[in-house]
Length: 467
Image 1 (cartoon, rainbow, N blue to C red):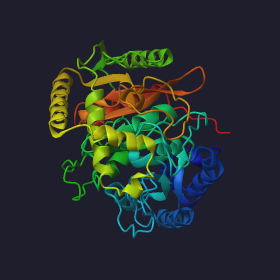
Image 2 (image 1 turned 180 degrees about the vertical axis):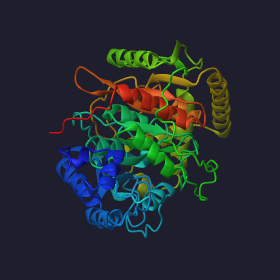
Image 3 (image 1 turned 90 degrees about the vertical axis):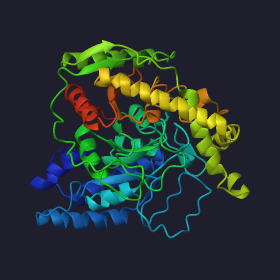
Image 4 (image 1 turned 30 degrees about the vertical axis):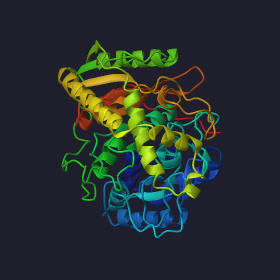
């Protein structure tokens, strides 16, 4: 057995240990469950833990490895799923007291189904704010989720439970969702690698009520883990009529090819972000210097669009208003004040206003398609600030700046649907992670992964010291 705790091993490392016989899926699953038992009471990353099921799945995986016949590329790897994503036999409560847990729960979402087919050991479901409605993870149902680097800080959101779980070693891989930054914000705050693939690359069912800004993507301990996850998650599913055609590529191939000669646009503010924390700015500038040292042709240039916060929030609030109108008055009375406020703001937009937002979104998408013809990659900070205090739902009056003003780099690329990742690039003086965002051209997921891997090769991902 290696000296390292198996709970601190990436999926790629675990698979190598299984292959060599140095560790087993049962041992890795027990290590992850032990982490959950020890740290989840403080961090509140998981809202549903299925320990007995996970161990039964791990025993079946162990038997397959002993026969030399693993069933798929993630066989025996402990994994978790954000509680917006359906999982057969488990309640999907979406962080909300409005959802009745006493339902059949007979379906797997496409991402869940692909994990099962790949042999992953499903540990449970991770916390989300109600309906994934904000960039912090708190809800009236599950309370406050906390950051493994400092439990007084938020892990971000809405995939905060997913990010906290991976950072704390409660399973090396997890699936999150990202509608305005909800994979990349928590990845930045928790020191993980988080990827928002091109829209449609990972099929979804049912589709998000917030529309075509909503992506699914992996949270992982390493870039190779994310490439492996994308191989699995990108397999087709006919239930998603917006999904892209099947892509037969193996995202691990070419991962080590480096970035020499790539044209990288470096934009520290996107031309409009006025309040970037100085430690974030310094860490990201140093990271870009490393990309240049690796051979990238770095040019300081803004992509040339105005802050699309109004577009993002307008479309998001209309989604909230739509969802609100599917609830009974009794259910509406149970909702998070933040979600209720979003719905109320959405109610103020008429059809003409919404159509104008869609047209502005289309213009932004066209602008970025053209910009990415001149640049292979765009690099920015992931979030303008380090992790801030973990706060309860409804802690302040919701507004557009309150909701997303502190993450001006994430939401534009949900509107444009481009692939984007967050990779750790340093720590603040207080020991909190800082993220660097790498944005690729539409369908350039492999290029984003390749660039992230090049950076990871010279600056490995940090891990928190758990108490």
